[in-house]
Length: 118
Length: 109
Image 1 (cartoon, one colour):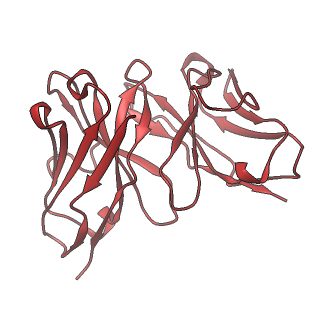
Image 2 (image 1 turned 180 degrees about the vertical axis):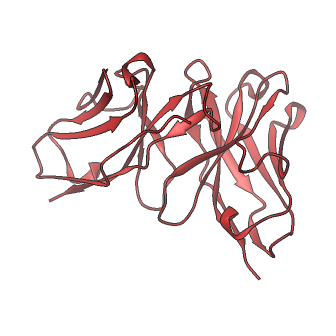
Protein backbone atom coordinates (compact mmCIF):
# COMPACT_ATOMS: atom_id res chain seq x y z
CA UNK A 1 0.00 0.00 0.00
CA UNK A 2 1.36 3.38 -1.01
CA UNK A 3 1.80 5.72 1.95
CA UNK A 4 3.06 9.28 2.11
CA UNK A 5 3.46 10.86 5.54
CA UNK A 6 4.39 14.51 5.90
CA UNK A 7 5.96 16.11 8.94
CA UNK A 8 7.75 19.28 9.97
CA UNK A 9 4.96 21.83 9.80
CA UNK A 10 4.37 24.40 12.49
CA UNK A 11 4.29 28.06 13.39
CA UNK A 12 7.09 30.25 12.06
CA UNK A 13 7.62 34.00 11.99
CA UNK A 14 7.73 35.94 8.74
CA UNK A 15 11.20 35.73 7.28
CA UNK A 16 11.85 32.45 9.03
CA UNK A 17 12.62 28.98 7.71
CA UNK A 18 11.09 25.55 7.95
CA UNK A 19 11.94 22.13 6.54
CA UNK A 20 9.18 19.72 5.63
CA UNK A 21 9.69 15.98 5.24
CA UNK A 22 7.68 13.28 3.50
CA UNK A 23 8.26 9.62 4.30
CA UNK A 24 7.26 7.31 1.46
CA UNK A 25 6.52 3.59 1.59
CA UNK A 26 4.80 0.89 -0.42
CA UNK A 27 6.48 1.68 -3.74
CA UNK A 28 9.92 2.11 -5.33
CA UNK A 29 10.47 5.72 -4.33
CA UNK A 30 13.47 6.29 -6.59
CA UNK A 31 11.39 5.50 -9.69
CA UNK A 32 8.87 8.31 -9.28
CA UNK A 33 8.80 12.07 -9.63
CA UNK A 34 7.62 13.70 -6.42
CA UNK A 35 5.81 16.97 -5.71
CA UNK A 36 4.72 19.39 -3.05
CA UNK A 37 1.25 20.93 -3.42
CA UNK A 38 -0.20 23.42 -0.96
CA UNK A 39 -3.66 24.59 0.02
CA UNK A 40 -4.44 27.70 2.01
CA UNK A 41 -7.42 27.41 4.34
CA UNK A 42 -10.63 27.52 2.33
CA UNK A 43 -8.73 27.90 -0.94
CA UNK A 44 -7.76 25.71 -3.88
CA UNK A 45 -4.75 23.58 -4.66
CA UNK A 46 -1.46 25.14 -5.77
CA UNK A 47 1.53 23.19 -7.05
CA UNK A 48 4.76 24.49 -5.44
CA UNK A 49 7.61 22.20 -6.43
CA UNK A 50 8.63 19.01 -8.20
CA UNK A 51 11.69 16.80 -8.34
CA UNK A 52 12.37 14.23 -11.01
CA UNK A 53 13.97 10.85 -10.65
CA UNK A 54 17.27 12.33 -11.85
CA UNK A 55 17.11 15.12 -9.29
CA UNK A 56 15.91 17.82 -11.70
CA UNK A 57 13.80 20.40 -9.90
CA UNK A 58 10.95 22.72 -10.85
CA UNK A 59 9.30 25.68 -9.10
CA UNK A 60 6.73 28.35 -9.89
CA UNK A 61 7.88 31.95 -9.71
CA UNK A 62 6.09 32.53 -6.40
CA UNK A 63 8.52 30.28 -4.50
CA UNK A 64 11.57 30.09 -6.78
CA UNK A 65 14.68 31.17 -4.90
CA UNK A 66 12.98 30.68 -1.53
CA UNK A 67 11.98 26.99 -1.57
CA UNK A 68 14.23 24.02 -2.30
CA UNK A 69 12.94 20.53 -2.97
CA UNK A 70 15.22 17.54 -2.48
CA UNK A 71 15.04 13.79 -2.11
CA UNK A 72 17.02 11.06 -0.39
CA UNK A 73 16.23 7.81 -2.16
CA UNK A 74 18.12 5.67 0.35
CA UNK A 75 15.73 6.90 3.02
CA UNK A 76 12.60 6.99 0.80
CA UNK A 77 12.24 10.61 1.78
CA UNK A 78 11.25 13.89 0.17
CA UNK A 79 12.02 17.30 1.63
CA UNK A 80 11.02 20.92 1.17
CA UNK A 81 13.30 23.59 2.61
CA UNK A 82 11.34 26.83 2.89
CA UNK A 83 13.20 30.09 3.53
CA UNK A 84 12.14 33.73 3.71
CA UNK A 85 8.63 32.63 4.57
CA UNK A 86 5.72 35.03 4.11
CA UNK A 87 2.18 35.15 5.46
CA UNK A 88 1.00 34.07 2.01
CA UNK A 89 2.87 30.77 2.40
CA UNK A 90 0.49 29.73 5.17
CA UNK A 91 -1.16 26.52 4.01
CA UNK A 92 -1.41 22.78 4.35
CA UNK A 93 1.46 21.28 2.38
CA UNK A 94 0.84 17.94 0.69
CA UNK A 95 3.42 15.53 -0.62
CA UNK A 96 2.19 13.86 -3.83
CA UNK A 97 3.51 11.16 -6.13
CA UNK A 98 3.91 12.09 -9.74
CA UNK A 99 2.16 9.85 -12.27
CA UNK A 100 0.13 9.86 -15.47
CA UNK A 101 3.24 10.33 -17.58
CA UNK A 102 4.37 13.01 -15.12
CA UNK A 103 1.28 15.08 -15.83
CA UNK A 104 -0.60 14.49 -12.59
CA UNK A 105 -0.61 12.97 -9.11
CA UNK A 106 -1.87 9.54 -8.15
CA UNK A 107 -1.24 9.43 -4.39
CA UNK A 108 -1.23 12.19 -1.79
CA UNK A 109 -0.21 12.40 1.85
CA UNK A 110 -2.48 13.82 4.55
CA UNK A 111 -0.59 17.10 4.66
CA UNK A 112 1.22 19.19 7.23
CA UNK A 113 0.15 22.69 8.27
CA UNK A 114 2.55 25.60 7.97
CA UNK A 115 1.52 28.86 9.63
CA UNK A 116 3.57 31.98 9.03
CA UNK A 117 2.66 34.61 11.58
CA UNK A 118 4.22 36.93 14.12
CA UNK B 1 -0.12 31.31 -17.80
CA UNK B 2 -2.80 28.72 -18.46
CA UNK B 3 -6.06 29.27 -16.55
CA UNK B 4 -8.67 26.65 -15.68
CA UNK B 5 -12.12 27.93 -14.75
CA UNK B 6 -14.59 25.94 -12.65
CA UNK B 7 -17.97 26.94 -11.24
CA UNK B 8 -17.67 27.53 -7.49
CA UNK B 9 -20.60 25.28 -6.70
CA UNK B 10 -22.91 22.66 -8.16
CA UNK B 11 -25.95 21.21 -6.40
CA UNK B 12 -27.73 17.97 -7.23
CA UNK B 13 -30.36 15.74 -5.69
CA UNK B 14 -29.47 12.17 -4.70
CA UNK B 15 -29.83 9.74 -7.58
CA UNK B 16 -29.47 12.45 -10.21
CA UNK B 17 -26.54 13.31 -12.43
CA UNK B 18 -23.98 15.99 -11.57
CA UNK B 19 -21.85 17.66 -14.20
CA UNK B 20 -18.85 19.77 -13.20
CA UNK B 21 -17.17 21.76 -15.93
CA UNK B 22 -13.59 22.93 -16.34
CA UNK B 23 -12.95 25.61 -18.93
CA UNK B 24 -9.64 26.43 -20.56
CA UNK B 25 -8.31 27.70 -23.86
CA UNK B 26 -8.35 24.71 -26.23
CA UNK B 27 -8.38 22.38 -23.23
CA UNK B 28 -9.44 19.60 -25.58
CA UNK B 29 -5.82 19.43 -26.75
CA UNK B 30 -4.63 18.64 -23.22
CA UNK B 31 -5.11 15.73 -20.84
CA UNK B 32 -7.35 16.61 -17.92
CA UNK B 33 -7.23 14.97 -14.51
CA UNK B 34 -9.84 15.27 -11.75
CA UNK B 35 -9.43 15.06 -7.98
CA UNK B 36 -12.02 14.69 -5.24
CA UNK B 37 -11.34 16.25 -1.85
CA UNK B 38 -13.59 15.67 1.13
CA UNK B 39 -13.40 17.99 4.15
CA UNK B 40 -10.25 17.49 6.17
CA UNK B 41 -8.89 14.89 3.75
CA UNK B 42 -6.24 14.76 1.05
CA UNK B 43 -7.25 14.89 -2.61
CA UNK B 44 -7.99 11.61 -4.39
CA UNK B 45 -7.53 11.06 -8.13
CA UNK B 46 -10.89 10.09 -9.63
CA UNK B 47 -10.34 10.59 -13.39
CA UNK B 48 -7.14 10.77 -15.43
CA UNK B 49 -6.43 11.26 -19.13
CA UNK B 50 -9.84 12.91 -19.53
CA UNK B 51 -11.92 9.80 -18.95
CA UNK B 52 -9.96 6.94 -17.36
CA UNK B 53 -10.79 5.78 -13.85
CA UNK B 54 -8.20 4.57 -11.34
CA UNK B 55 -8.92 1.24 -9.74
CA UNK B 56 -11.40 1.56 -6.91
CA UNK B 57 -13.23 4.54 -8.37
CA UNK B 58 -16.89 3.71 -9.12
CA UNK B 59 -18.10 3.57 -12.71
CA UNK B 60 -20.51 6.36 -11.79
CA UNK B 61 -17.59 8.74 -12.31
CA UNK B 62 -16.81 9.59 -15.92
CA UNK B 63 -15.14 12.37 -17.84
CA UNK B 64 -15.02 14.00 -21.23
CA UNK B 65 -12.95 16.72 -22.87
CA UNK B 66 -13.49 18.67 -26.07
CA UNK B 67 -12.99 22.17 -27.37
CA UNK B 68 -12.70 24.60 -24.49
CA UNK B 69 -14.47 22.51 -21.84
CA UNK B 70 -13.76 19.35 -19.89
CA UNK B 71 -16.54 17.78 -17.86
CA UNK B 72 -16.64 15.47 -14.88
CA UNK B 73 -19.92 13.58 -14.72
CA UNK B 74 -21.14 11.77 -11.63
CA UNK B 75 -24.16 9.55 -12.24
CA UNK B 76 -26.59 8.36 -9.58
CA UNK B 77 -25.13 10.82 -7.09
CA UNK B 78 -24.83 9.66 -3.48
CA UNK B 79 -24.47 11.66 -0.28
CA UNK B 80 -20.89 10.41 -0.03
CA UNK B 81 -20.00 12.19 -3.27
CA UNK B 82 -20.34 15.57 -1.57
CA UNK B 83 -16.87 17.09 -1.85
CA UNK B 84 -14.71 19.63 -3.63
CA UNK B 85 -13.62 18.62 -7.12
CA UNK B 86 -10.55 20.01 -8.89
CA UNK B 87 -9.52 19.70 -12.52
CA UNK B 88 -5.82 19.78 -13.40
CA UNK B 89 -3.65 19.86 -16.51
CA UNK B 90 0.04 19.99 -17.29
CA UNK B 91 1.11 23.02 -19.28
CA UNK B 92 4.77 23.53 -20.14
CA UNK B 93 4.21 27.19 -21.04
CA UNK B 94 2.76 28.10 -17.64
CA UNK B 95 4.66 29.38 -14.63
CA UNK B 96 2.88 26.64 -12.67
CA UNK B 97 3.56 23.64 -14.92
CA UNK B 98 0.95 21.67 -13.04
CA UNK B 99 -2.18 23.83 -13.14
CA UNK B 100 -5.31 23.37 -11.03
CA UNK B 101 -8.76 24.80 -11.48
CA UNK B 102 -10.22 26.78 -8.61
CA UNK B 103 -12.38 23.88 -7.47
CA UNK B 104 -16.10 23.16 -7.40
CA UNK B 105 -18.06 22.38 -4.25
CA UNK B 106 -20.56 19.61 -5.01
CA UNK B 107 -23.54 19.73 -2.68
CA UNK B 108 -25.94 16.79 -2.50
CA UNK B 109 -29.35 18.19 -1.62
